[in-house]
Length: 164
Image (cartoon, rainbow, N blue to C red; front, top):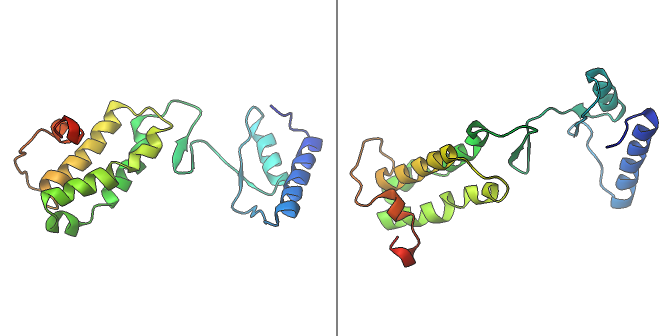
């Protein structure tokens, strides 16, 4: 942890200018945010103003992943479930056969949460929400009316070597 006095802030600014000079890149301070912990709110604002950045607050999204200093609940991953729903256009469910829907489900819808599951251990609620999106697309296509399932969804999700 670094003590945030005026000298250390000047050193941080110098470090950022050195980065710009050596890399040839330009830092856009209007888009940048600084996150300061362990000091009073007035001091946080002062530090953000000295660095010409906005003061960031938690939770934040970094590379599409939610970051927070507390435990993340299932509502933090609603964006991932909405992204899965966004991949499904109505024509895909209407025009694809069961085999085509299965390929789309396995390739696209099941790969979206893989990145997030590499970082977080998702709760059962999030897994259930993802399974609902995948199973409704597979069995119903684009319609909202109920259709009878020929096989249990758990059996469909098994690898082909195990009868899925």
